[in-house]
Length: 383
Image 1 (cartoon, one colour):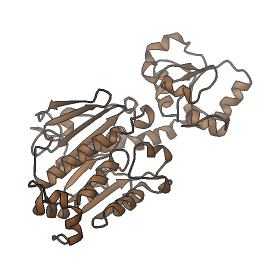
Image 2 (cartoon, one colour; image 1 turned 120 degrees about the horizontal axis):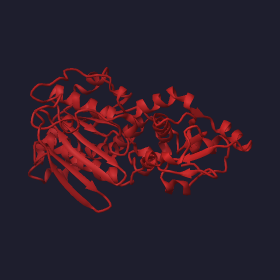
Image 3 (cartoon, one colour; image 1 turned 60 degrees about the vertical axis):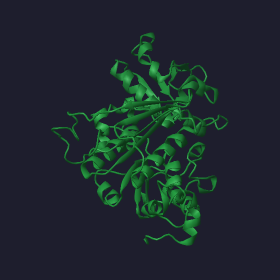
Image 4 (cartoon, helix red, strand yellow; image 1 turned 45 degrees about the vertical axis):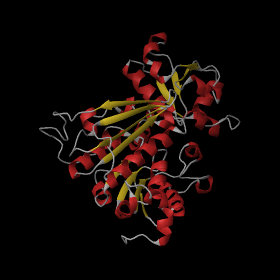
């Protein structure tokens, strides 16, 4: 890729060229730079759009999903016209339309310990656009072992976080969280929801940190974690320190190679976990038959109560998942129970919690209430 800027590029980046901190040399540096963006969803959308607009010469995009209509509330790099298209191809189309002078390299695959080096080795900065800890720990460990900066961001409901982890200069992600928590304690945006504009705000901050790193300007968020509360419009900064006992970058590291992180947590884990526990499930049609026979059966809805305004099953007891363990004493251990949520993820977790507490006759509605709507009651709303 040529170093010099064309006349069209000089016009395109004229507002950068006026900034003493960027100027012609800085814009040429951006053109020579490369960034790997892992995830092209809520966070990856603004990250990729603004890095493409800024003129970062090569953008790698990693994702393995296809565009769904529920994505469009926040994933603005995609559009109605690309529903059903691989996300990396949908994003590539939009980014090339925004800035045809840059190179966009799509990787339609799940990032794993086996393929990350082949994908990430040629990129200057790794940016987190994911929504699961499987990939987050993998990115942190790879960046730490290979001396690359890792720009971190996450969102949940109305709250977001941003930092820059660079084990050469400060704390890494494992300095804060040495080990991942159990999968059942990891709600995702699809389970808990997220305000649509929140990933845009957090993703823009990640893009800002990335550009600063590439240009060597300003003070990057190394050893600093910014917390953002969208409801209060409040930013809080937490100062971090490298943990001497960190298993990755501490004084006596124990992590020297990447491992299979899917055993811990994340989207791939969730999907395989659902498949492996079908013996704990009941199909919508089977449940419909039992209800028609007026079998004695307790229905527990573990969704947020506001979700029942969209769809519900008659007679269901609403107990949000986070409150379930505190109310288990209300039920008999041998009572037939069916637990349901939107798609079956939270109800699988609920079944596990109840079985651990000694409930012997509890099952999850396979596919959740959305599956009930599609298989039993087409007049019911889905979301």
